[in-house]
Amino acid sequence: MLGGDVTDTPVTWLAIREDQKAFEDQQLRALRAAFPDLVEASPAQLGIFFHYCKASGLDPFGRQIYMIKRKSRGEIRWTIQTGIDGYRLIARRAADRAGQSIAYEDFVWYDAEGGEYAVWLRDEPPAACRVVVWRGDSRFPAVAHWREYAPKVWDYEAQEYKLGGLWPQMPASQLSKVAEALALRRACPADLSGLHVDEEMHAADVAEFRESVKAAVARLQPAKEQAQRPKASSTGQSAAGVVDGELVESAEPSSDAEAETAGEAQRAPEAAESSVAAGSAEDRRASLEYERDQLEEARIRVQKAAQQLGLGFDAVNDRCFDDFEVSFQDASAEQLGELADALASTADITDGDSDGTSASEAPARRKGSARKAAPATKTAKKTVAAKKATARATKTRGTSARAAK
Image 1 (cartoon, rainbow, N blue to C red):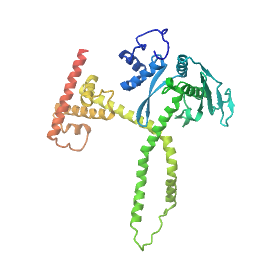
Image 2: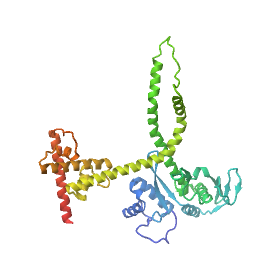
Image 3: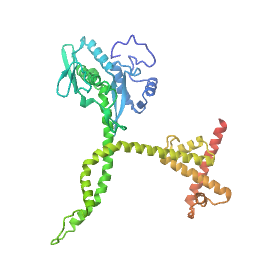
């Protein structure tokens, strides 16, 4: 390997060989099992990841190096990360190849007033940390600021932002890791460029969440503008309708209630962003719960309709593949709703045929509706016949499958 001497490393079928040019199939299967997100990575992105693994000498199967999927501004991007120990190992190997040494000066932490501390003993987090790395005779200082790297995540229970990960328990240690990584990258740019330690990316993860909140605010903004538009348009029409010589009175609130409403409207722009930002997370959670409830309701409807037709799970699953090219478990609430309607219609037609009721009257009689069913057209009859044939075919396939089992 390019990353250093690995002759003492046990060779397995997962080990990256020195003559290897890319991940092999068995290695890719193991990687995707360990990191499911890599299923979405393109061959080019996996090729870049392989290059970093081989150049750094770090083992992806030992979780020394990994590729993380992130979504920024609606686009998927991949970040190659390692721990601080991996960073130190790469820097040490790079210095050894060049016949140089790696050394450190004492770490220095700073408070908000600029005071220096060789050891951080306060309860509050430090404002900054400085690390100096020597590579041979060259000195490489770096400073990490708390406000730039400490991740703050939204706490739903407390309704406020709090530090995430290990940052609340070990603030000085986490910040020093970032500063050390910055200094090592300056000392070994050829080996560490484009590679980040985990602590550097914690704030990036939080930034992605904040971007999603901003996107939610942007989606809600048109609704607020739409609500204000009628007032603006009516005012514009009044102004446009003014004729020379007419005495026009200024528009004033006609009552105390209207005056209060006008004052709230003026204060709304300032309060809108803060209230929407605080409530958008709750809105997202409520939206997800609503979608989950809709999906569960649609599944129950399909199951009830299938029971009326005597269809098993395999038959329903086949029907989903035939109609939507997805399985029953992967179908959306809208797709399952269409399937439930089709199965219920078929069940009504079957019952209507058995008791002499016409196909057009059966659904209305079952629902207890007082309305008369509309006369069936030729197209509707063909559609009903097709649905009926499909249901019977799926029922036959399901029965055969159960008999075979």
